[in-house]
Image (tube, rainbow, N blue to C red; front, top):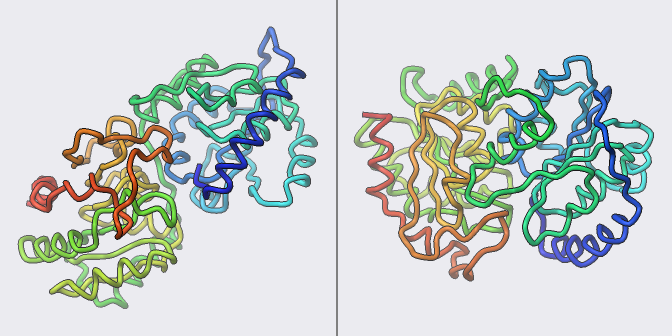
Length: 374
């Protein structure tokens, strides 16, 4: 889950006592009847939602007649717009008391919390009143008290497999492990027409650079704009590709800095795509280069080759879940330091990045790129 420091403080110092207090009123179920209504909760992180798709799919296939609802942020729900495994969508927004009332009225049989550390999602799971409540038992987070059943969150195990532990706990067979995107014709048409407007030749390979990584306002997973600029120039000179820059609306400045410094024209789509248009763009690309973030996982889900740059994050746990991937990791003893996404082991440098991201050299990234472009 993405959040600012105040939300983290509130979640910890108010959420933990609430979890402990409310646990005194929890009833444990001895049997787990077949569910008619299932709720999944994933409040914020796009990457986590993408990595949870094999789990959601397996539970859908195990209970084809159940109604499955997703409570999530707007970005996550946009990603899931055409997902065939979700029947109903609830937007997570304030005021919270109205949402609590709505969740209670739905009378879910199962409530499954897909978050790893926030106490808020555990409290929402409890508030549903569902007789079966499943969530992660994460070391040091004190949130598992409100679940009737827990699964361990294992540090260093890929998050897809951590999520799939839920299916094991619920005895749901897993038929496929791949990620998915569901781009509609409107998104694909938008990409095609936008590239025509940008005068990109239809036969020119696209290399998408997604420079920002991680939470907004938290650039410690980001490779420097100077490195992205140098990489873009070499890729154009060696492989005659068209560079495309992507990112969220509040990440435009970084992309503009890169575009202004490159020797060759880059197409600026930063701030211009929604999540499904971005997925359609990734689908049409020859290669995507990104730090560890939701769009990196989105690129992997499309099946397009993706190079993941890892400094604070562990590629064994957070690397692209795809056969078409290259991993470049930092060469520094304290890397990786992240497990849940916020517990950085060092202070940011003046430019906001982490020292470990500066140990990733351009040549090492180029070697990974060459595997897919040569």
